[in-house]
Length: 281
Image (cartoon, rainbow, N blue to C red; front, top):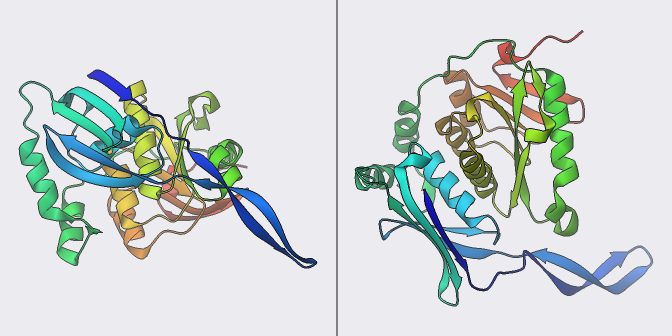
């Protein structure tokens, strides 16, 4: 995959602004930081695919992960070239298909299922679920301690959230012998939950990280779309700080995925795939 990166005017990820602090003793002037939000256009073979509102960082990883988790590409080898340009007219990531790869038909199928407001309608949801195959992975593959450790790494490394309180995060780490390889952890932040997930997946593709041997940890709630995105990427094991939706649990159970919510400190709730966990004494 040939890359042509042209960020002519790099944008700051955060900006400072004046504010007022409310305290029991009264109101006082202060300063705070805000996370920046910018539109990003993704095109494939010069056809617009999506415009994402995102944090201006890791645009290529975000776009690559988006195409992968939406099922538009099946591997990074489907892409012949990618170019990123940031200028006054907007931020654009342009992908060109590899020779012999027909992405046009996949784009048509994608648009038939999804709308600009994302997944809409029971039929669309059923169409997405029908395209996903259940995972066949061994039981007792992840120690609960690995979930705790990955959550702790995410908390330590959320630099933009600490400064602004305005970002979501997704982190992925490889599991070996049931335990976490901390040095393998990839963390990305963004204003959107979906964007953070796509950034992590895209970065993993670029680094050739084995997605099927990794644990994904999310900072927000787990919706049907988030679980479907992970499943398309080949990730069967997900944990999150918040709760899943009923549809997310239904899909995870159908696909034999590990789904863990309310993972905070050493406590959590397992909604699906308990067999994946190693019983610790």
